Length: 510
Ligand SMILES: O=C(O)CCC(=O)C(=O)O
Image (cartoon, rainbow, N blue to C red; front, side, top):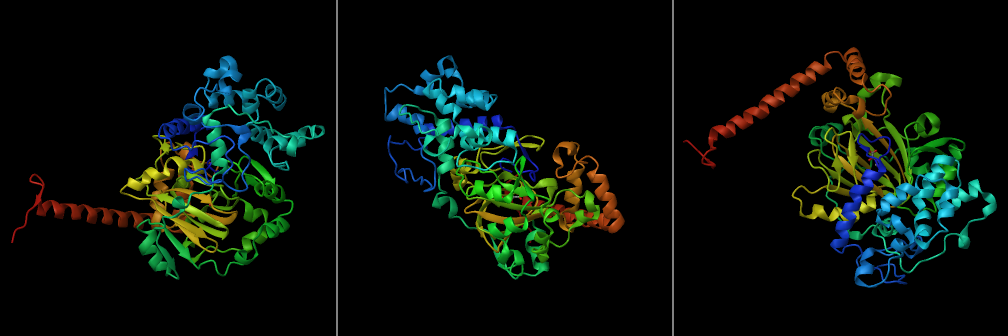
C-alpha cells in the first residue's frame, strides 16, 4: 500500500529504492518529452500537454522548472541548482534530499539561508513532513504546509505562516525531480485515466451465483445495491465520525491521530502522497461504528474467525482526501477482500495474479515491491503502457453505496477521486482456504505473513483450529482440488490425441 499501508502483503522497499526506480523512469520521460515544458510566469491551469492543475493546488514551488526548460526554452541559462550546491552539485537530487533528511529542523533552517539552491532543497516539504511525523507523531495541527506546522508547534514565537512563509521564487532553478514532485501534488486526474470501465457490475445476484461466477473463478466484480441497509450509508460523514470518535486516535501511516486533527490536515492538503487513515481496530475502538455496517451476504463465510483474538488484522476503516489511495499491492496472506465505499468515490485498476503491473517490481520472494513514488506518478508514467497490452487491467470507478470484490492474488491500485470513507475486510472462505494455507506455509512465512505478531506459527494454528471446528473440510477440499486437476490434465490429453503436435495441425479420424 502506498506508501504501502500496513494491510499490504508486499511491503514497499525503502523510500530511497522506490525513488531510485521512479527516478530512472522520470528521466526517461523527459527524454520522451512527456513532462510538460513550462513557460516562466505561465499560470494557466492546463499546460497544453493535457495536464490540468488542481484549482486548490499550491503555487509552483519556488518557481522550480523542469530541466527541459533549460535545454529548450532558456537555452544558455545557468542552472542555479548547480551553482548554489557547490561541490555537492554532482549528487543527484534524491541524494541531496536524503542527506538533508539527516538534519534537524534548526540546521535545515540555517542551510536554507546559504544559497538559492539550498533554500529550495531545504524547504522541500517532504523533509518537514518527516520532521513533524518523527517528532510530533500525530499530535499536530496542520497549518497549510509541513514547515509552518513544524514551526508553529515547536517554535511558536517564529510566527512563520501565510505570506511570510517560503515566498522566495527563483527564475533559474531546474530540477526534474523537484518539479515532478510538485506536479504530482498538484495534478488533476486526466479524463483519459478515468475512462476505461470494463468491470462486470451486478445487482441483486444470489450468493450461489456470486460463488460460481466470480469467487470460484477468482474474478473481480462490482456489487451494486448491497449496502442499502447500512446505517453507515446515511449517517457517516466527517462531522458524525468526529462526534462519535471524539478522543479516539486512529492509525494514519506511522502515527495515530484524532479525527479532528486528521480532517483539518486532509481538508487543506495538496501533496503527492497524502497521509491515509487506515485503521484495523476502528470497530473495537468505536463500537457504534461496528453496529452501523454489516458484512454483505456474499462474504459471510469467514474462516479466520476460528482463530478468535489471534486472527490476523482483517477489517479497516479507510479515510482519505482526493488523491490519497493505495499503490499497487496484493492483499495479505493470499486472502480475498471486499471494499465498500460509504462516501466519495474510488478509481480502481486491477491486474490478474499472473500479470505484474508496469512500473512495479516485486522482489523474487514476493516480500517487497518497488513502485513509483506516488499513485499519480504511476498514472503519468506507466498507465499508458497498458494500452497496447493484450491483457488489459480491469478498471472502474466505485461510487458510494458500491462494493468492489478483490479476488486473492490480484494486483490492485486505488485512488480516491474525492474525499472518501470506506470499509474493507479481508476474508478466507472455502474457495481459497487451501490457497491461504499454502501461503502461510511458505518457507519465508516470517517475511510474507502479515497482520499478526506470530507469523511463523499462523499456519499450524489456523490448520489445527479449522480441523477442530470443521473436521474433514481440508481433506474434502484437497480431494476436490485433486479431481479438478485430473480433469484438467485429461482435457490436455484429449487435445494431444486429436492434434498432431509435430505438424502443428489438427488430425481428425472418421
Ligand atoms: O484505498 C483503498 O480503498 C483500497 C484499499 C486496498 O487496496 C486494500 O485494502 O487492499
